[in-house]
Length: 497
Image (cartoon, rainbow, N blue to C red; front, side, top):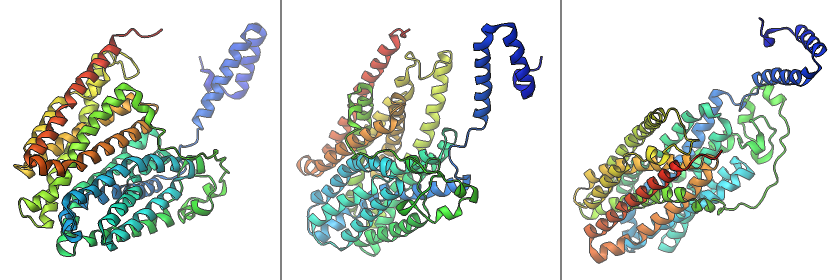
């Protein structure tokens, strides 16, 4: 028998006519069949998710990923110069560390605020705002001669640079379908992971040869050059503004990139109906913290991040004061942590995919949608070892900087990968909101941990200070155990009919 879908239109009409004559009750079935054929035909002609070509998408992704790199570069390039800045401004290292704390606090708030603005006003206007803030702050830091000015300008620098990563994720979501998104995200993460390793080396070398102020002149040159490229050749991608990329753009949304799009796309640019704008609300992500499992997952991430940031902040200054290293060499001590972190992140991601598939096979193919799936145990399997290694590395940190930094770098990176993946799994329909809440909590906690670090060192000594931080890191273990129990209780509940 020839399938209905393979008959020519005339044959289908004859068949429908015969069926209706034989059985009037077949009208409903006939309508259903016709709708099915129409749906199949329309689905086969479904337009692409984005009109941008493969190479255009790569260009856009490289632009946004390079911009995202400034978020981590602006933070890490500064660490080897902390002692030099302290001496030049004639203030204590404790006060200089406040410039790191304030940077982190703003880094927790700014992405939620500017990210919400970007969703309403488009990517290009917010990118321009971020670059103007960043360039202005870098010029100001290079020229100022007082601690209050440095403190305020570092906060301004953070407001401009820290939202770059979330903006990059937004651009990727605009131009890529789900089946191609992973590779683009990989480029973004690659660029942001380069900075923690290379930033301190560059900062140390510049401080050693030219002085710490040239760190920020270097950032002015780098950000200014990329700002020029972005303004001229970065298209607007926000789907509320341009739809699939074919929507008409004028004014601030227009770029020379439009001239390089194919003529057919330009000739058929539709008018996109833009949604009504509202005032951005940076606190819209906070209700996610009322979800217990999400809050506990964020807490694990935040504690790990806070301890790591205290290590990174102290590393450059202590290597200069204790080991009498020059600024270039003090920048090189960040490489072990960065290298181990990069390796650990990659292999942990592969391990999580493998462990998820293995667990699903054991449960006869049940996936995340099933309440019986042990998502907490699956995503956090092995985390007890990582927490222990990280705590031991923190405890012995003052005795062997290079070795312990390598241990903590790898274990913390793996913990980040596990908890970030679990947080996404727990909030499949609001993962961006969940990660915005996580960003606020971890940055505020890290800022507090760095703020009390020097007073602790002065009061009880370097070793005891990091012994306390190591003990705080071990508090993650009971949090993980409680998470496991919550997942077990959910798995034991019968599925609702």
